[in-house]
Length: 237
Image (tube, rainbow, N blue to C red):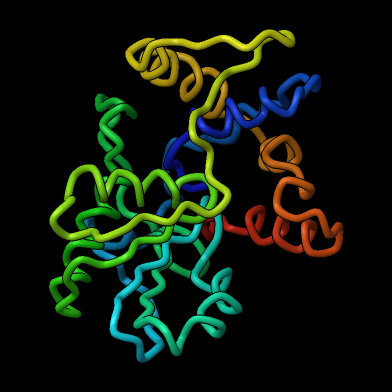
């Protein structure tokens, strides 16, 4: 059962890869609720991060969709002499717990979980006494969070580095690129993508039609390894 963060990105990612398979649904599955007894993390907190390095400048690394802090291990080892590095895991990925789900009547356009991550980053910066940090966003979601942090809190961010991120998502419908207004995309996600598509979609269909291994790396072995890491994140049922 997958954590629900940015459903619309999954749909568009699939459209951009030209998926022809029909969705596979299971009426016994409800991906819009957490398993019974699931212990959620605190809203607005980063329960797990590690720090390394001894440089003068501080850098915060945000892994992308489905990845935990381990995706940056080689990166941090290479730059540890130049920066003080703080690597977070977005709650719900790796072995961390996700925050509680938004209320059923709320809109995905509120980006409640992403806002929770940003509040957690502000608390982390206060705790570690970080000022004017470099913020690095990795792939989908990590890049969005890093750019949003810079836009909303310019007094706290010195620079933004985007690693493998998308400048903009554009839907491809039957081979034709289509752009929609933000309000339209939010409405469609609230009414259709979440309730009529994602709610009962099977894990296997979701994983098989999300980003392909070749998106993660041109090395087929490494790409498959990274794909498996993303596919592995799930709520313990």
